[in-house]
Amino acid sequence: MSKAAAGLTFREGVGHDPAGLAAVTKQATPMKILLVDDDELFLEFAATMLRADGAAVETCASAAEAITALHLEDGGQPAQDFDAVLIDIVMPEVSGTELCSLIRGHGGYGDLPVIMISATRDMSLIDQALTAGGSSYIQKPIQAATFAGEIRQKIAEARG
Image 1 (tube, rainbow, N blue to C red):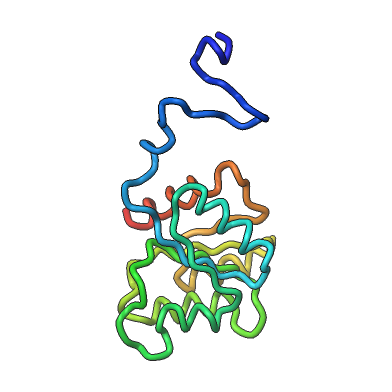
Image 2: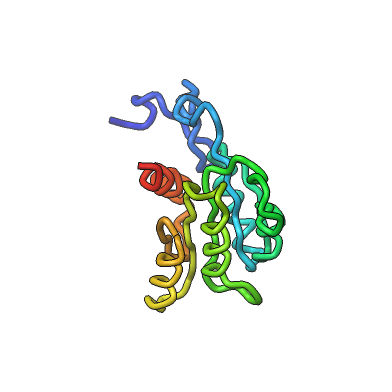
């Protein structure tokens, strides 16, 4: 069956969705994600991928920024109702593993999925991050076509 026979048309290499099916498949309430990574290019790329899928994304370029965004320093109520936090494992000053431990130590974030992300192949660092409370792990480089879906799946798995 040709693409034209299937009712699909393509313009400049980008799929066109005449029936609006893409809008129907998105969640009614967008995911709220906190993305923490010291690599500004990765932050921009990953945030763009998640936003293209309809997610609301807040980015932090350091663990210190995430500590502030999550209100971890004052021990008070959680700052926002995030669906997940994505954290790079290897960051300067405060590592992703240390940040994950701080999040898990805050009573308001006990059920929050914390997804660790890293380019490291060092299994001991990955194991430390998961032992510190990471819900799951995603290896960099991420796949643009599947990244948002993978995040949705990991959130669903973490929430049981």
